[in-house]
Amino acid sequence: MVALYHLPVPVITSIKDDHLALLRELRTQAGRAGAGACLLEGAALIGQALDAGAVVRFVIRAEGDRDPLAARLAPAGVPLLDVRESVLRQALHTAKPVRWVAVAELAAEAGDEVPYGDFAVLLDGVADPGNLGTIVRTAVGLGVSDVVCTAAETDLTSRKVLDAARATVLRARIRRFPSPPDAVRALRERGFEVVATSSYGAIDQSLTPLHGGPVALVVGNETDGISQPVLDLADHVVRIPMAGAVESLNVGVATGISLYELRSLRAEQRALAALPETERARLNSLLREVRSGDQPTH
Figure 1 (cartoon, rainbow, N blue to C red):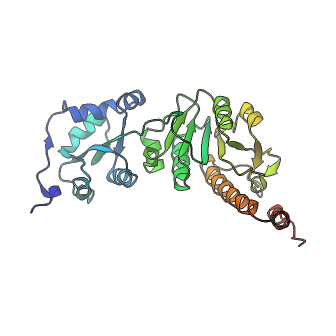
Figure 2: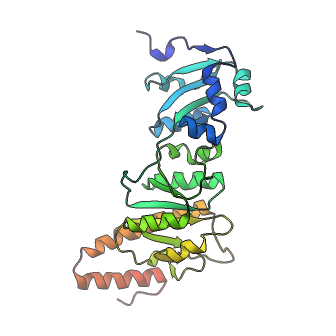
Figure 3: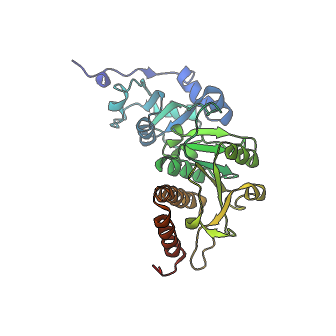
């Protein structure tokens, strides 16, 4: 029996082909929103999308390319088509070599009826596509599925975002609100504690007195940080301790540090809550001394 991926591959011969027309449509944010799909360029990114469980409508490759990705497509039920590389570049309006491209379905944006997890990331003015992708990849990698967008122009479907996110955007639960304050109020109504980081925070992040419920981490604009209205609404404004002359971190890096530390802190506080009161008070005091840099007094 001949394996499916060894059968002849259909060949696109015209620039007017419907598959290529869809590629052209997906080059714009409006086109992606209208089609509910995005472009994935490169065999590596397509493979990462398959690993993420994304629904891939079809894959187009330049004739003659023998990347091992082809062997994964037929078993996954993904159609593969061939086209001359020059035609593919013409369809994508690019002069650079393009060997593989795919169309993947976007996950539907989550509405109020879709339950939240116990952690969320709220984007307050984050604009750089590389940072957006890094934040989503970091969040999903740490088990945080809810990504809250607060500006209409925030586009998580662009090529740069998808590349930086390694296609994990297709796994995240994307939620949208008209403004950062609206998002903060909505999350607080759902029982979230809202944590915002700032160089002017009153306490170190590791000492945040969380209550044990769901947590929303606000991450701010690359230049201006978190907006003042959001800082005013946050339950906790904390700082990441910095050493030397470094005043701040890249927002993607800071997001990873904050999510990891806050998730660990929340788990620790929940474990402490199960202890007898006297033992809990002793361990809490010891942990606070360690985190503040003091020598434990025992």
